[in-house]
Length: 336
View 1 (cartoon, rainbow, N blue to C red):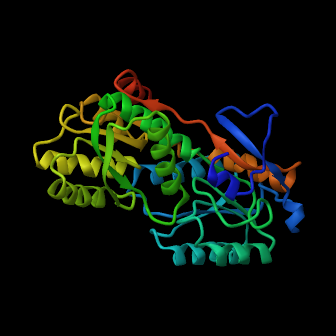
View 2: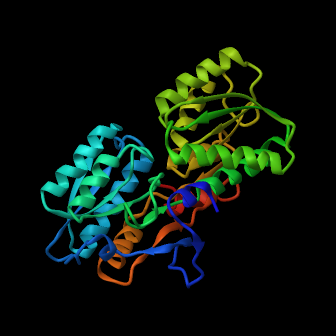
């Protein structure tokens, strides 16, 4: 079981028929009534959506768009906020939406441990809390928040390692651009990647540099500039999201080092920019992290408060892109 799932209280793999687009579900089953949360009338009651980061990142844009579109489809009044990457602001945003009458909050946590204030407030007000994308860790499943939805970030890291081994033939001086600190996504994508290199005995891939670039393009570029000064012999980069990969690519381009014939790049997300870079010969592979949680989140919320409950953790399915399918993903709109 991936560490984030265990931390979120997923004690067993549920074997019932899975909804379309779902990879796995883990118990226990969460019921809002166990926390004194009443039923919600989606025709009249209000729901809140709390986004964690500024919507300059395509993942965040697509994430919010999915929640807004699904609420509109279902005729649900939706309040929206954006914490601009500030944990205290997200606490304030969530409590503010509750004070405005929101009966439930769907939220993307800025990090896995920094929203205790908002979670405690919601619990005291009997408001349902549905985390998506990033897990809330350090809480017992179903006792502090409702069902959590996300991708298997450990698996994403493993798939990225497999793609890197394939791209490099198992021989590389590798740099890792880490995501934001204190986030289960970063920890899991790192663990999955390094564990897979070890499991596949890819000893020829030497990790010569690791530094956080906070999931942003700007820091991806600046950190890579530092990397190239300290390690001009680097010939492979694992970026834990596409924005950092595109920032790294910009730094490489400035040095005349862009192109997978010079430096291999594998990243995670599935944005149009990164998938286009595969087509252009600048990135080897991208592991998708699907941001479209809207339908799954509202289904889970409905089951949690109005039905028989929802599993503590739902893992959605992701795709993988390389030269074989990148253009098709762009043509079909699969890349976001």
